[in-house]
Length: 521
Image (cartoon, rainbow, N blue to C red):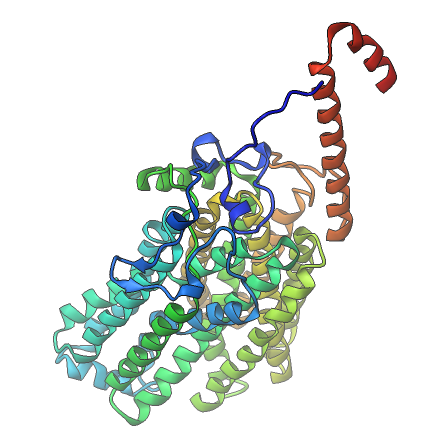
């Protein structure tokens, strides 16, 4: 007779949020880093009514374990729009401080307003990017430690307030300091992307990630175009006044739409979060593989866009700066395809989507190598193909990495984005040097080689390897996600059946066990 046992009152955060069962032992980082201490509390205690003790949370957005908020298309679009106008902070200054004074004459006015030389203000983009790298390393992992709603509202409010200082200050030192701090506080998109993955079923995860990512990429393109156009006709300070307005709108939008979700790892400290992030970076084969591929891919991407201006401005094209700027609109078309790409990735095992996208990158790099200096049609094809394939690759790699651990997605994302950031620095510096010294074809060969390296990295590890397998193709080569999920479901069902049988036998009287074992066999 089976003994009646009290029900288990432990509730995991993934079950509270309606995300299904918590990760298995194989998926956990360690008992300390991924196991969330269950804290059963009364419903009245679970509902937080204010952020920071003063900012009220709308009733419909308060966390309630019995009625969790729904993450639908509207909230997904809000995440994307927020990413657009937050990440733009990192790129407003670039056209204002272009290395070519002929390209953006307003850069001269920028230096004049601070009464300094052009060389003295040219360090500002570097300070912004350095601040962003610091934020990725030390702020974005907080998404695994604290509640995301107050964290996001705080970061967006800080960046908005600091932008006011950029618009009104007359001191270059103050301006440079604020640029660094704004870069550090503009990491909200890297908290929104893991949050979208947390709140979306696995069958729709790539689609959700792709919408937020496309918003982020639009922000990069829009910021450069907007800042360049506005500064051509009015003072550069107007650019930052506009930035204050759109960021304020983002804060209001997040306050009105972002539900309050509980923290994921209440048992960890901040230093433990940082330490486990460092450990993830050297012990997780999937993360290391994705990071190395992303580094090479982002190096190709930035190398292409940085050297494209040189290519189109020289022989045989000799295009004006206006015509060259229109290629940014071609890039926007490629970015607009990202959500459709996400829907496609949801149908495949992510490894195959990564392979398909990397092969696409190799194909467009081949076109660029063979025909970029001959016809502008090749440049247009490469621009669209590079954007679509590169975003497909990033979404698929991100989806794979997020599958490592539900409780560590902010840390996993931080490592992945840092690798992308390093690749951008490499692509900008090395690509420019190669182009200036040896011409566009040498630069094209460099990008082609980097892309071939990505394929080699991907092929050394198959699509279904176990978590800590570094090389090989164990687990087969199934490519449809539905087939793999059905197989995994059958395995889990078999395990549950076997466990129930063993429990029944363990609790049966001694003389009945042999007979029961014979019957089961």
